[in-house]
Length: 357
Image (cartoon, rainbow, N blue to C red; front, side):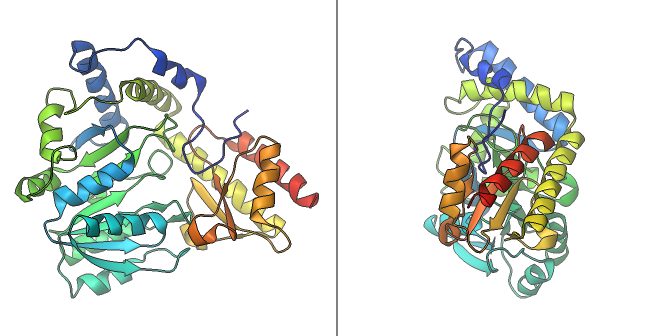
């Protein structure tokens, strides 16, 4: 039974895990080129990325967050900030010497399109960053509407999206919404062991990268593209993770992408119903709750640490809140291989633990 409910990494199915013990192959061999081509082809077909460059990067998703800034911003970038990880992206820009314009909202709140418009009506920036699902709060920002308002304000602005805890569990129409760079790691809703990140890059973003100086080598989109044309990567890739990803993409194709999204939505609704019945409040705004992560405020009379430890004794691994929310909330990751049955079992045990307090 799947009892790993943190917001990532997620439980890996045995069938996927076994792919990581395949005999090693050389990363410059024809065998690797075939594997690389298969994985990229599957990703493009399954998620509608045919008109985008898709890069496999041996790094955490934070690496591509930095790559997006180094390649797509010469001087001035606007960051939308609603929690710890959207704040981290702004810090990355500052550490790379970029001028940062911050649009910040209270943790638990979503970034609204009118807020973005109010700033872009008076400021001209090269790019805007959006964190689709803020892992620290469970907020799912209105990405489609945010992309639309950015395009209406200035069609030249590049849209950079952190989809780390959303991709694979929430629909994202990259081309239709006009996203230029989207990034995520495979260890969350894709349910593959960590160590591999994926960057989806538009031709517009790649063209911008050609004019930006100081990109370095390891995170350089131009270098990625050069090797991608040969079905390869600039440096040694995480081959075991790519074997695992290939198998997982086969499984996703069998399940169906739409059904995978629906399954995640159904799990979120179960937790929302349970929280209402048990007197718990979601930390995130009602209309902006993620299908992959639920951040829940601890109920009066309970302590987060006690709740998490008691559930661990039963074999269920949950997460405390992030940052200053550590003692105020707990987080349930319901993504990847989870289904209604595993979530119902979790909630049943949560009730028993709470009633024993």
